[in-house]
Amino acid sequence: MLIDNKLDGIGRFSCEILKRVTKNNPDTHFVFLFDRPFSDEFIFSDNITPILVSPKTRHPILYRYWFQFPVKSILNKMKPDLFFSPDGFLSLGAKCKQLPVIHDINFKHFPKDLKSSYASYYNKYFPKFAKTAARIVTVSEYSKKDIAEHYGIEKNLIDVVYNGITDGFSECSDEIKNETIKKFSKGQPYFLFVGSMHPRKNIPMLMKAFDAFKEESGAPHKLICGGPIFWGAGEIETTFDSLKHNNDIIFTGRIAEEDLQHLYASAFCLAYIPYFEGFGIPLVEAMASGIPIITSDVTSMPEVAGDAALLVNPNEISEIKNALNKIYRDESLREKLIENGRKRKAVFDWDDSARKLWESIEKCLG
Image 1 (tube, rainbow, N blue to C red):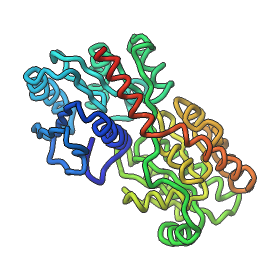
Image 2: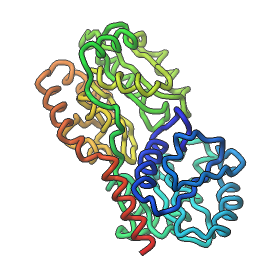
Image 3: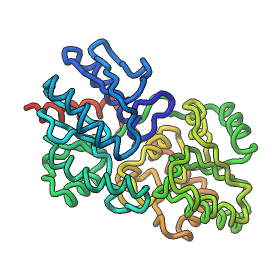
Image 4: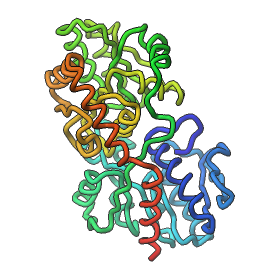
C-alpha cells in the first residue's frame, strides 16, 4: 500500500504509523516487504531493510500466492519476532507471531460492492487471518465490535488505533480559499466529498440529495467529488445523467496532496455519507481544515465525527437534502460545528496512534 503519490486510506495509515514506529525504536530492526519498486521516501530510517518480493500483487490469486509462498518462505528463513501487516493479510502457517491491522470487514456486510473474486477471497481468508493472529489491531470501536462478533475473537485481543490527521491539513487564508474556489468550482461555494468512487461511498444518493437541494434552495453551490474511480462507476454515471443540476457536480479524479488540502480548507462543508466505514479519514481531515461536516449515522461515523457533524440516514434522500439546507441557511450552526471540530481534532494524532500500535506489538511479544 506504500505507493508514491497514491496513498489512500490504508496506505496513509501504513505510512504515518510506520514512519513513527521505525524512528521511535532505533534499536529494532525492521524489514519492509514490497511487491514492486518502491520510493526511497518510504525507507524512513536507517534501521529498515527493504526487500522486493515479486510478483506485483493486485489480484486475489496473487494475494494468496504472495503471502503463502514467497512471504512465508522469507518469514520462516528470517524467523522474525513478529510479522506486522498494516493491510490485514497474513501468511497462514508461517512460524512466527503475526499482527494484522483489519481496518473493517465491509466485505462481510456488502459482498456485492466488490468484484466477486475479491469478495470471495476476503470472506474466505480474513476469518482465517483473524484466528491466526496473535492479536488484532483495528481503527475504531465499531470495527472492534464487528470483528469480535463475526469472527469469534475475544475483545481483549483487539486493540483500537485511530487514524490521525496528516500534516498539511489545516485552515487556510482567504486568498488561498479564493484561488481554490476559482480553480475548482468556477468561483462558487461548494460542498465537498473526498474518497474513492466506490459503491459503499454512496455517491449516487449524495448526488440525488444535492440535486433536490439545488431545486429547493436555488443556492449557487457546487458539489465537488474528489477521488479516483475504484469500482461501480456505472451507477454514478447513470445517476449523474438523470439529474437536472448535474452541471453543478464536478468530478476531479485523484487530487495532488497540496490541492487536496486547499480543497478541504476552502469548502463550504464536507458532505460524506457512506453506508459503511471502518473509520472515515475525510472526517478528521475536515475537522483540521475548519469546515463543518455532514455524515452518516451508521457504523463508525458517529464515533469519529462526534459533535462536529450533522448525522443523517445515508439511505434517505430527504434527510441528506435537509442537512444540506441546514448548513446552507444556518450560519450559527456552521460555526458551532466548525468550533466543535477544532476541539475534537486533538483526539486524532498520529504520534498517539503510533504509541498505541507499539503497545499492541509489545503485547504480542510479551
